[in-house]
Length: 300
Ligand code: HEC
Ligand code: HEC
View 1: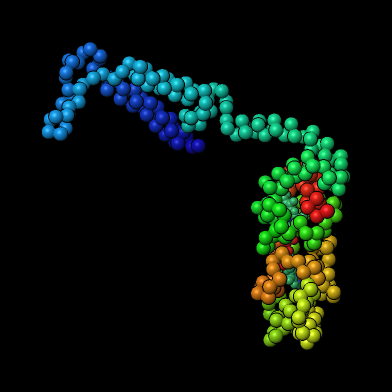
View 2: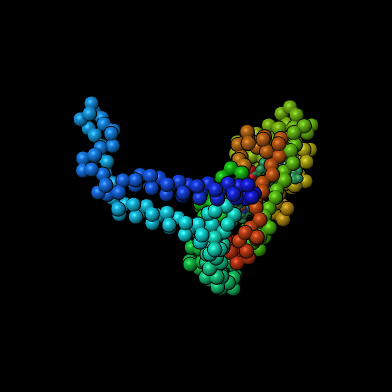
């Protein structure tokens, strides 16, 4: 806070409190007993049939008022509230939050450390660990992959044992630790996609994925577009891709973005670049170990 706002807040807060004291004093002008029994304030309503007696405020009520004012002042001395002044107790919400996080971490550390001694397939059989895994998954992963890991458009299904980057314990840990960036470059403007080229290519990719009822002619034309457009370089001559590089296997019939013709055309013409965030810094190795076991358990 700049010093202007610092003083601005202080003046405003203190002026308000002083204002309240003044307000009470003003309203308290008449001490009990001083006002005549039936003296009115002079306000009247309903053509004079309804009038307001001039009665003092009850003592107990006034005292409550004074007590709250004293409480407010004491609070402002002990805790932050007056501009940049942090209060004599040195309390801050951020520090309290950090202390609580630290306390929880201290309690959880031995539990996670004990899980780390088990291999991922072993841990995947441990009900207690998997409950923790499910909770962590709900907090950290479900926004993108869905509560059940079933994925959504643009976010892969990680519960069906069909992998882009690999489903071994090591590969899952690697995915969570360092994240994944995939780049499918745009192919708009390739001569092989002109005319019927794109339609044939899409039909061929669908054929690779197991779709039935596509004519031999279309498949032949599509395969040649597939070769000429350069799809082979990444997805391979047989369409099985390359897990180490994150180039999807098109023969699984499993699509992150979609297997319908419209979506495939979009993928081919504009490219795709899926990003799985890295979690090492956020979660640490021990939690990643438990989460990797949870993902493993969804598939085995
Ligand atoms: C440079 C390597 C590369 C080339 C060349 C390439 N792709 Fe891809 N392709 C990828 C990668 C990587 C992905 C995954 C993108 C992602 O995860 O965001 C992908 C994704 C796809 C998908 C989406 C699959 C899904 O899960 O929805 C289709 C379909 C596809 N490619 C078809 C093709 C076709 C057809 C060609 C040729 C025109 C081609 N690709 C050329 C690397 C490549
Ligand atoms: C912001 C969205 C997002 C969050 C959060 C996220 N992921 Fe992902 N994840 C993705 C995307 C997108 C991909 C696919 C990357 C690509 O296109 O190659 C992916 C890929 C993966 C893969 C690789 C799948 C394969 O087929 O190889 C695994 C495993 C995975 N995520 C697990 C997790 C786990 C566990 C968490 C929670 C710690 C998590 N993800 C959190 C977006 C997310």
